[in-house]
Image (cartoon, rainbow, N blue to C red):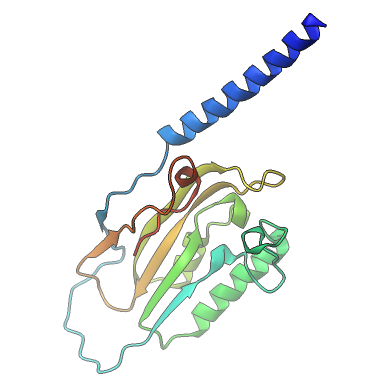
Length: 197
């Protein structure tokens, strides 16, 4: 009987140490953006005075191309973490098609755009969408970079890297990422996005 309890104790100790090691690792690699960060716009060109009386913009949370009509997302009291790869591809292709066909927009402000995250089937949404907007000035601001999001336990989000991207028909003089205050305490904050604008 003593041997049985010793085995149980060792199993509990190993589980506790593994969990503590996981939290230590995630704490050490936690993405900690500065409150204010200068960003480097891509495709920058010569600055000119914009002489247009109307500018058009779209601000769109693309939901990592994973939150369409067929999705039942667990954070919204649903059951799933991500759509199937085929549905995710359909969503991303639809987003790209809409952007490509909408040429009257001067500024696109896209949120929740992923860079090879598990939740978006490792599609490089940043690359695919910037390919659609070739020749346009843009800047990317990271707001989510976690090696492993362990929820839900039965089908974890896993690796997540994403952020926001702004496309402009006009060259950008500068771009700045401003961080919002943290929305949770340790250890929850380790697994949440670092909100910004």
